Length: 90
Image (cartoon, rainbow, N blue to C red; front, side, top):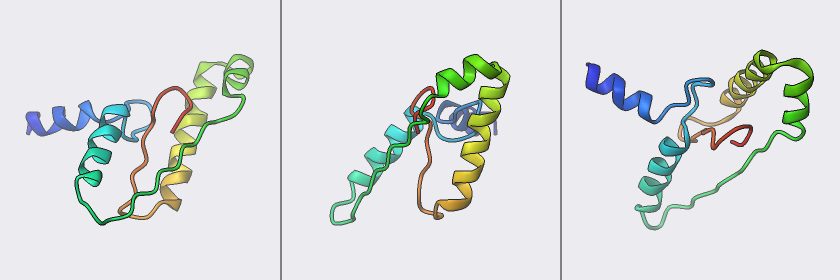
């Protein structure tokens, strides 16, 4: 059980609960290993996040990131994969 929990932590962003860069990389590697299936990649970047974070504080910035992920999860399909690449990039 601990090994399974540790494996999940390694590929999960602790702030948002989305996959982290490693989780994203592993998922893309698995998907590209299956020839003949289309792969679509979208990159999301929160414009002016640093300004927001500086103006409202890091706690508010963290809340904004968590809320974005929560909202996006409602929009993505079950087979889609949402990952936090870094900072405010998903």
